[in-house]
Image 1 (tube, rainbow over the protein chains, first blue to last red):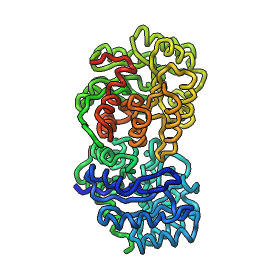
Image 2 (image 1 turned 135 degrees about the vertical axis):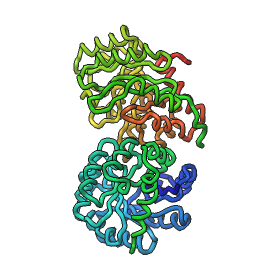
Image 3 (image 1 turned 120 degrees about the vertical axis):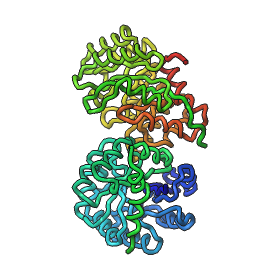
Image 4 (image 1 turned 180 degrees about the vertical axis):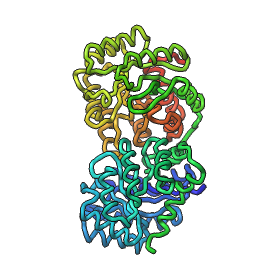
Length: 248
Length: 257
């Protein structure tokens, strides 16, 4: 079975003490027999640090067919952020937008964020939100963005974390442009519940590696008691379908 | 380096009973999963029952341990806002039921981990050299800094902080949990549901495998999946044996085989 990991990190930021070069995630992907991974930085762009987008661009060029790029952006930069994101898709071949509102402290349905999400949607690129248990990342908050931009595909990374998985399922029931994503969330049974309530076409496998272990994250989905067809959609089919549309 | 994944484990944190919050597990169901997942023994403790009364649940734990003395050991659970009655229930659990430690859940029982309310319970544990397992990482109730504040005041009590003392999927509590563990050598990190695997590996590298303990928090969490956190860790087998088995035997005073 082919596996695509929809959420991993690479970055080297000595200022922050972060050092996860592409080789770290590649080694873990090899161990878990994962063919491809979507990579993103820990840092936002634009920002005080230079060459954040370029860092991803160089990595996906170094590992073609293995790494897929998302641009992690700070919407507060307005038009500058939109222009840089646009270039990441058109020039560097990135496939999506990553937003982590904790790192730039802004509501996920703020005007500047919606402008960026709208631009991603115009390119048919998905938006992956960090979606956990703290302010600005809750499923109900991100749902406001999904409702405001119904043609955007919005992915709830971590599917609500420890305490908000049921909220993630609730909002996805009423908003068809929301997709849940499995990384780090610790309950195999909630993967099964998501499939039962939303269908397997609404869920993506991801690891949040290298901090989380991709091999363990694969096992979590395999312990959920799904059919081979459902597993295929979650491990590969859904994300391949979403990324196949980007730029068309 | 990822070493052997075949290790016999002792689960230091499992529950039996029926929870107010919808989870349930019988002794037979737990033993069946343990057999399937190669988990030789478990320390069991009550779920918060629909009745809100822990005494019958502590009796249930004692009955399970009596029925399966080679597979199970048990911790007492009490509700600290019952004040003196909670201390009496702890003493009953230790003296009459022969349970071997105390489990406290600050979030479900609504008290802060460093609340003076629980000091009489800690004094019993200190006097008898018994461990406390504390449900860790609940915002407002068992933040790593609150666990650390308790641990600092009871340096002779071993405190097992579940989930590594932090439940935050963006990693915003990793630094706090690390500071708490470094400052308080009497705190042990339990691994259920933990964010992230590199937190386990980094803690072993910095503080040693003696400070990390396998627990599953079953049935709320998945016992077999939680066991894989230990078995798959990028650590030497000796470290995994300590985390997965030997630390529980030493800290909780279990028979060695």
